[in-house]
Length: 139
Picture 1 (cartoon, rainbow, N blue to C red):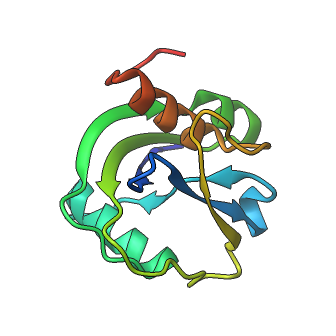
Picture 2: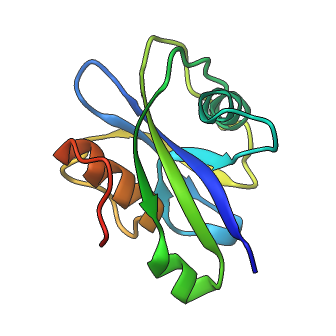
Picture 3: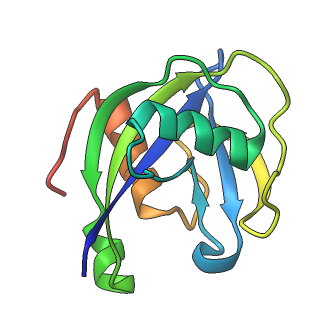
């Protein structure tokens, strides 16, 4: 069993809303920010830009690492241990599109204080760290 490193990217617009997707397939019916697994030799920033382009067709600029989270609830439920590096990117325009409809069925801009449920643990953790301006939390 190994630990997987992933990135979670909060894309925030001028109103302070975050872009969320409703997952299909493996993590249905959870809502989540976007991201994915880091490829060997890839920086966290490169991974964030690649995943956002692949998943929703947006080009993000200058994503910044602001925190990490250890997603132990998901590990206990699914047996997969993921550590998420959390990045923040400011929305600069363009129309987000569902590039992978087999993985995501709906996109919304959402007030981070009123997240839709059910919500994916890694996404909830990332948003909470961002809101608290906290780098890491044990819980």
